[in-house]
Image (cartoon, rainbow, N blue to C red):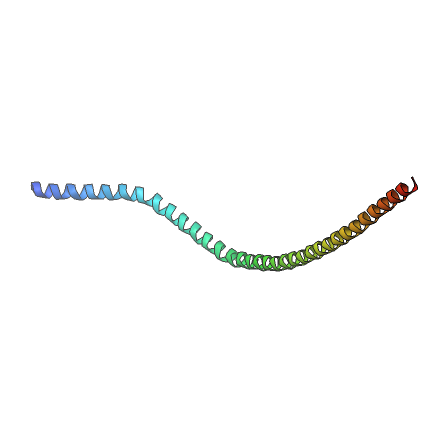
Length: 126
């Protein structure tokens, strides 16, 4: 029977411990690798979905922005029209006010003259 030295026993024992450690490490690494595979597949699926949807989304955003631009132009035009109409109404109200002041002044002068003539006529009859 061959004799083993202490160094041979240490080397054999080290190889046995290395083998056991490798098996334990493999036992812990296999679930991690499986989960990593699932995660990578999910990331690939997400990237594919985003790639498909981003074109459609950008197209809809472009339509929305175009619609908002059109809405802005129409609103600006309508505000301009309303401003012009308000200015026209303001001018008409100003003209009516001036005419009313003139008519009121003429009416007031006529009434005052009538009262004065009445009073003169009545004073002259006494």
